[in-house]
Amino acid sequence: MRSPEAPRTDLSSQAEIDALQRENAVLRAEVTQLRSSLRMRAATIFAEAASSPRALISAPGRLWSLGREILNARAWRRVILGLECGLPDDALRHTAPGPGSASTVKTLGRHILSGTDLPRPALHVTDPALIEAISRTDELTRLVRDGPDWPTPAAQAAGPGSSRRVLMALHTGQPDQTNGYARRSHEILTALSALGWEAQGALRSPANDTGIPETLTNLYHRIGPVIPETNGLDAYVAAYADRLFEDIQRTRPALVHAASNHVTGRAAALAARRAGLPFIYEVRGLWEVTRQSVEPLYAGALGYRAQRRMEIETAKAADRLFVNGEAIADLFRDAGIPSERIVQVPNGVAPDQAPDPAAASALKARWGLDDRPVIGFAGSITSYEGLEDLFAACASLKHVPFQLLIIGDGPDMPALQNEAKRLGLDGQICWTGRVTPEDARTAYAFIDIAPLVRKDSPVTRLVPPLKPLDVMAGKAALIVSDLPPLKEFAADGRGVIVPPGSPTALAAALQGLLQDEASRTAMTQAAFAWIHKTRTWPEIAARIAGVYSDLLPRLPPA
Image (tube, rainbow, N blue to C red; front, side, top):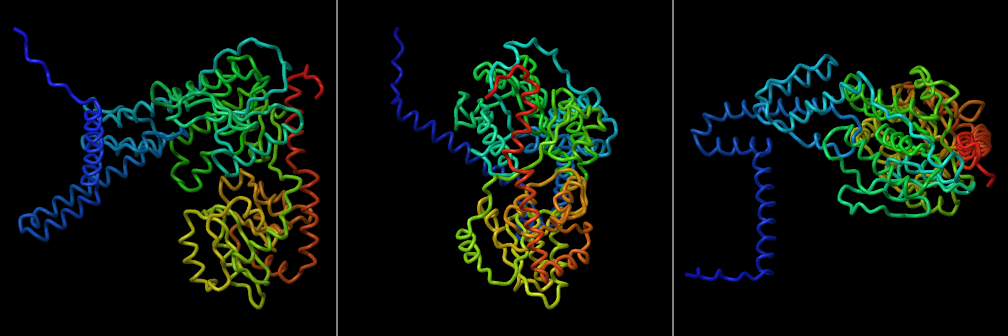
C-alpha cells in the first residue's frame, strides 16, 4: 500500500524560516556570552545577594570562584603575549581556556615569560584553545632554535634582465592604509615608475574575498586572500608564498622586493626562490621592538625571540638587504649579514612637498590659533614620544609668548590631557585629535618649532621616523633627542639636539629659538636645502634602481 504523500513545503517560506532560525541562534549566542561574561556574573551575584538571604550567604564563595576565573583569564592573556609572532588575524588572541585548563595555563604563562623550557602539558588537558597554544609554542620554539627550512634555489627560469618589472610584496598599501609604512611604499612605487620601472605593489585580499587577483591602480594589485590549511606561522607563510608564486607566474616580474615584516619577507623569499628570481628584503623597523616599547614584558617572550630570528633568517636569504637607518644596519651586521649586501634606503620627501600658504592659513584659522609662535607636534600620542617632557618644559617657560599644538591621537592622550591641566597649560594648548596626513603636513607651514624629543628606548634607538623630514619640508625649526636615528637630521646646524628625558634642556632650547627668530630662519633654510639635495623620493628611488640594475646585469637602458 502506498504511503500518504508528504505535504509540500513552500521553498521561499522555508528559506525565511531558516534565516530566522539562524538569526535567533546568533542572538541566543550573544545573550549567552553576555550572561557568562565576568562583569555580568559579578553584577548578578550582588543583585541576588541583595534580594535573598540564601544568596547573600553564598555570595563570598561565588565571588571567590569568580576571582579565580579572572586570574586564570589574565594568565591566558600572558600565554598569548608569549606566543604571538606577528601573524595576521591570530585566532589565539580571541580564545580562552576551559576551567579544567586553568593551572596548566598559568604554568605555561610563567614559563613562556621567563624564557625557560616549556613543560609538557598533562594528558587530561583537552581545551582546544590550549591544545592550539601548545602546538604554536612547539612551532615557535623550533623556529627560535633551528630557524626556518629554506628550499634549494630554483634555476633562473627566464634569465635576469628579462624586463623592468618588479613585484613589491607589501604588508599594506595606500588603497587600505595611510600610515607611514603605506606612505613610504607609495612614494617609492611612484618614483620607480617615473624612472621607467614597472613597479607593482602586491597586497593580500581580505580573508572573505573571492580569491580572484584584482588590479587596483597602476601601482597596486591584490593577490587574493591567504588562507592556510592549518594554524600556525609556518602554515600561513607557506600559503602566502603559494599566492605570491601564482602572482609571479601571472605577472612575470624580473625581481621580487618585499618589505617588513618577516611574514611578508619570508613568503616572498620562498616564492622568489621557487621562481628563480633575485630577492630583496627591506627592513623598515623591527615589529617586536615596537611592541616591546608598549609591552615591556614582551622582550623576554618566546614570540619576541622567534620574530627576531625570523627577521635575521629572512635577511640572510636575501640577495640585498635594504634598511632605513644605520642602527638597523648595525643590528644585522652583528647578526652576520655582510656589509656589502646591506644598502641604506632612508625615508624621503616629495620634491614639491612645501605646504600651500592659503591652505595653511585656512587650517590655522580652523584650529583657532592666533599670532603667537606655535610649538607643535604631529603623530601618534604614545609614551615613547616624550610629550610629558615637552609639557614640563613648556610649563617652565616664563615671559615668552607661545601656544602648543598637538595633532593626533593615541593611547596616552587622556593621561597627557590631565597632565596639561595640572601644569596650567590649558589656555595655551590646542588638541586637534586625528587629522588627515595632508592636514598634518600642511600644519608645519605655521608651526614655528617642532620638538621630536622621543624617550630613550629600544625602538627610538632603532627606527628613524618620517616626521623630521616633514618638519624640514614645512620649514619648522627642529629639536630632536640625542638618539641615533634622530640626531643625523639636526646635524650641521639643521636643528637642535637635546638629551632625551631632560625637560630642563628642552626648555632652554625652546626659549632660545622663541627669542631668536633669525636663528630659526637660518636653521630651517639649511634643513630645507639639505632634504631637497639628499632626501627626495626620486633620489632614493634612484638608489633602489641602482641595486635592481646590479642584480639584473643585462638590463637594457630605459
